[in-house]
Length: 422
Image (cartoon, rainbow, N blue to C red):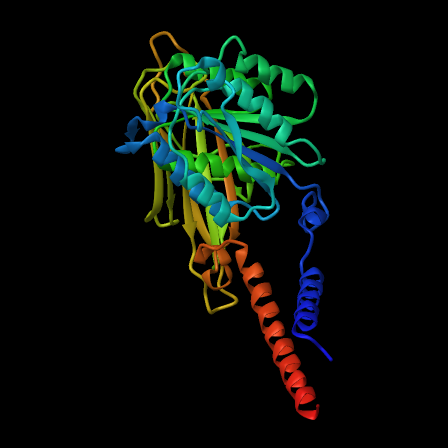
């Protein structure tokens, strides 16, 4: 006779078998993309020291700006990127220097991204204590070990390292000397000259970039650009000479382009966007010589007839080496399969002016990133509902629950039938 205990054990065994048959081990695909390439790895390293409470980013705190940027970047992270998040200065609130300089922790492990879990982890952060940049970089390099894909650390900080004599610039040089192909990019949130020099040195040591950000949009756009660059590490900058008007502008496709921005002049480029595609583009202009302290850069997307579609702009006040901005233009889909591509004219204008005695030729280094991708489809984008990739797990649970209900109902009817015959 079948007892209740035996029946329950059998159902549990069946559920375990079903779950084992449906689930796919994460480690089996963690180091490769769908096309068999080695998966790129990125770790975002965020300064959560006490100074991140300062309210000077678009009327809000630096911490609030960083959280918003992380939310937007996590939504846009390519599927093939294995992304992690590490903090520095997030957990220790005391005054003991030795303890404070060990305060770095991995908030989210490097691996396939669950957007909901990552966002939840970031939402819990609150500015706390010290700024151990050097120790955090050492730990981040360890976090990215393994695999043959591109590896990138993106460091976001608003101040100098407070844990000398471990010089973070020397740490970056040591990482570069190991020949592991790891790039460190740094972003400074309204830094002073010393912070700028330190973050620039860290980036230069590994062939990375330094960017100073003063607005939330700047931070989001730059981090997103760096994460996408890791996903396509084979991109080689291509020289492109912008024209004086759209009609004579070079036609660009997705890629990374370099040019020279003449002082106070416009540069024009053209990009074709099909119905249902989204144009994502950003521009950075570096002041590689002494310039007057007030400057800015404007990026506009306009039609061939001159109507403005969207714009991005950024300004500096002499405290940055690079000023960057970006924009996005999602072209609506069309019911006409033969609808032609739309030519979008990109206008880059800078307001740099040279200091006395400084040569204005050649122009300032300009880097233009163009990315034309398929536009988002909310009906098929799980992230649109805020659950990220958790929908597949929900589907598995629903299926398992349905099958378990059928098995349990069948077993109950069978047990009742046996009881009546006895």
